[in-house]
Image (cartoon, rainbow, N blue to C red; front, side, top):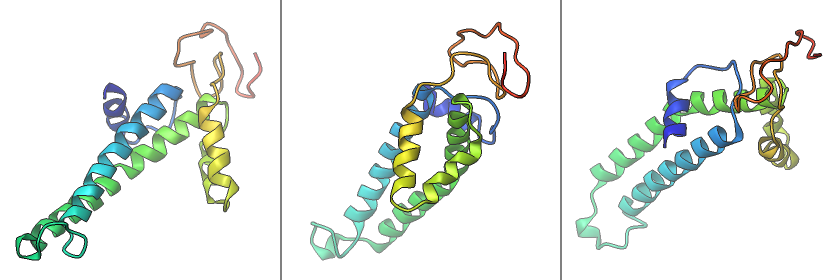
Length: 144
């Protein structure tokens, strides 16, 4: 949960680097919360509710929908920021996030990139978040 809160604290921080653990722990909790809100919304929906229609409440359904939409919008920027920082850890530009827009293969390629280990040295985006080999100097081209 600390990794999730760390990403939310760094709401607009697109610079720097993010470890795999930070990225994946954020998205683990993010998808758990989205799933829970989606479950509550679907369960409260009249047409999909298991409960008899006389007990269903359209107000509750609307409230869960509002919470779901507000949460999705509120966590959109941190999701982009942590994805950008994750690409920085690999030595790539944060714009690599847009590879997701390529149909079929883009999302799969981005998934592979997010699973790769970051550079074990200082790169042009900052120090290694694991603290390994941070005493080396590099120029902005990426050479040591």
